[in-house]
Amino acid sequence: MTAGEIYRKTFPFVISKLLLAILTAGIAAVLLALGVGIYWLFRSETVAVIVFIGWLGAVGLIRFAIMHWFGYMVKAGHVAVIAEAVTTGRVPDNQVSYGKKKVIERFATSNVYFVVDKLVSGAVRQIQRYVEKAGKTLDFIPGMKALVGLAKFFVSISLSYIDECCLGWTFYKKEQGAFKSAADGVVIYAQNWKTLLKNAALTMAIVIVTMIIVIAVVFVALGLLFRLLDWPGLAAFALACLVAWVIKWAFIDSYILAQMMTAYMRVAPSTQITFDLYGKLSGVSSKFRELADKGKNERPPAGAAESRNEWDTAGGGAGGSEPAASGGSAFCGQCGAKNKAGTKFCGSCGAKL
Image 1: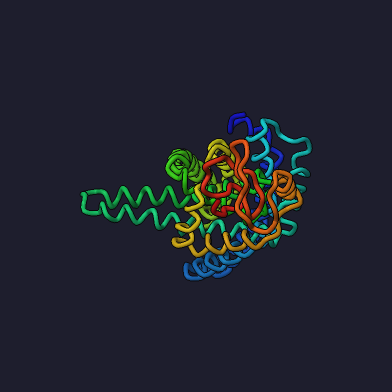
Image 2: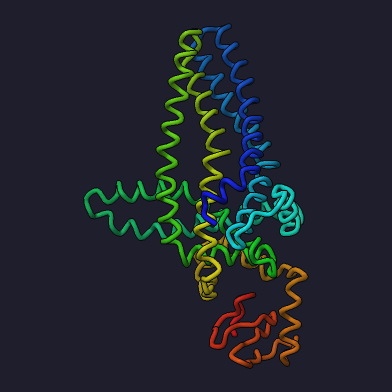
């Protein structure tokens, strides 16, 4: 199933995001109208600037309140459904209910999801800043500083979607805890970062051009209307940005998410996680180290018991002895998961075999 097909077939989530965005923009528009009214009373440029700054602060608080409590969970449900569609080739029936159910099963409460999301987000950005240091060694080349700056701009925008890709891995790896799967997801990103960021940069270039066109068209239309009504042009620009944000958050962000997750979930299952990266990334990122530590300490889900039973049947034990090998397989002495012969690190818990 292609990214375009997944985007079209998960459109109920796009509509849900659109409704939330319209609610947010509607409240912001009402506040903007009140601000224009205040400007009309005083007819002062200073008042206009003060009202505009106050409006920006109020809109920021409203957006945070709505998106923090509702937007995050809608996006998490969308991630769960996209992960299912990419890996199985089918979109679940009643997908909104399915996405909500999977989020509750995986994270139990919204607070757990927020903690995992913030840790993954912080870890990805810290790792990326470490990688970007390589660009500084090329500053002596004429024009290279500008090119590196442009590349960082594209990368910084695309990183938010990589966060969701890593979270998508938690829905795929049902036999592991959420923190452990999220940490693995970050490692998979680190192992495939060139391929994933190349795809992200190409997608973001298209999106940025699209957004510029949308803002320009909406601003020209509103600017002409506001001019006829003798309303301030600053209000026209603010309203144009609101309309563009609604379009971006509901339609464009959902399309990018489908594109990025499709690329990620295509390479992730075949990626052999190198657990020596756990130590390296922990040294680079304090957020990743915290995520990995939480993964070690969390209780595995009920399905993980199957791995232990298989190990026990093969002649292992729960006492942390050396893993048994039979038929070209090795069983982890820490979690009991089955691994290929010759594997140095457990594919389930990361323990050295």
